[in-house]
Each structure stands twice: as structure tokens, then as C-alpha cells.
Image (tube, rainbow over all chains, first blue to last red):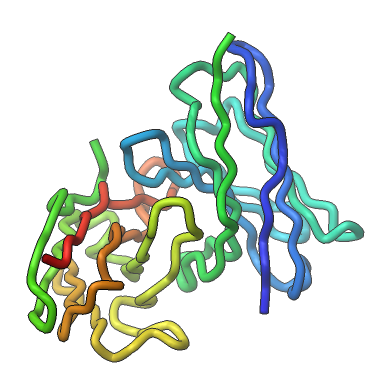
Length: 118
Length: 111
């Protein structure tokens, strides 16, 4: 059974870069698409982007200029970098398996809280 | 403001039936599959329904999904206390170079 676990600093300063990693166990990164999704406090879910093992990516147009998703198949993990963060980026960040329109997100991590504050 | 519109809340008593709606447009629900997720705060969201009406493995048949034109619905029958959670619809949207969009979520209370 696949398991995903997010990790990274829980606090980021405004204008800095937020960095998170998702470690995957029970599945190979080479067989699926892998996504990042977030949920700001009191709000709904927002898709950030996905990556395929080949390195192909697709980002939410509203975040595209600030987001980079990368993958390391040797470590079975993928990562998120979001630059120039503001308080509006404070959220629970989830990593998930999937992202193609025909599959959706079938397994998720527990989520990690990131607060943007000076 | 979410691209997909869901009622913010719903409530019903145990054993009863509840329907959660999800309204979109021709660029999203009208042309793509709809997915439904159950989310208990502090836990990982769980995929309930994929491809409009297919239950994920292990999901009881009390849960069912449907889609018509630019709207979709999640129906839960025989409500149980453990069904109390937030429910989100999601689909791919073909506008703006393509992106996943979610509903704002419906908080279901089992009275």
C-alpha cells in the first residue's frame, strides 16, 4: 500500500522560498504522476501542480511563475519549491499520487502546515 | 471563490439520505470526469468516487456519484456518524492552459 509523507520547515519568511519534500513508499515514482495540493486556513483545496517521472510538469497557471516541482527517482521522493512567499501562502500542503484527468488523486499524505510569517 | 460551487454545509440524521451538489461549467464538469473526496481535518483526504460514478476500493456502496451536463452529485444513503466530514468535488478544467479545480467543500453534519 502506497504511503506519502510530507516534510519540510513549518515556517517561512515573507519573500523567501518554501521548500517541501514528499517521500513515497510502497510504489515507484516511475509509474505515476505526482502532485502537490494545498489548503489555506478556512478555505478549500487548491491544486499546485504535478510531475511525471520523466520530469514533465504541469502547474496551476495562478502559481506557475513561483513554483517548481522536481523528482528524484533514486530516493523515491519529489519536491516543491515556491518562491516569493507571502502570508497568502500559509496553508496545509499535501502531496498526492495522481494528477491526470482520467485518474484524479488516489492517495494523499497527511499534510504539513506551513506558516509564512516574519 | 471556487470554480466549482458546493453548498457550504449539509446535515441529516443517522440512517437518512443526503445529496451534495457540485456545479461547474462546460470547460470543467461538462467535459471531464468528476471526483469526490472525503476529508476529516488533520487526516489525509480520501478518494471516494472517481470517473463520475466509480467507487474507490473499499468505499461502501452507501456512497454513489453521478454527473449530468455541468453538474455532479454525491449521494450518501444510510447515514452513519462516521460520515461526518468535509466533502470536496474536483475535476480538470480546460481553460487557462488546463488545471485541476476543486469545489469549496461541504461540511456534512450527522445530527
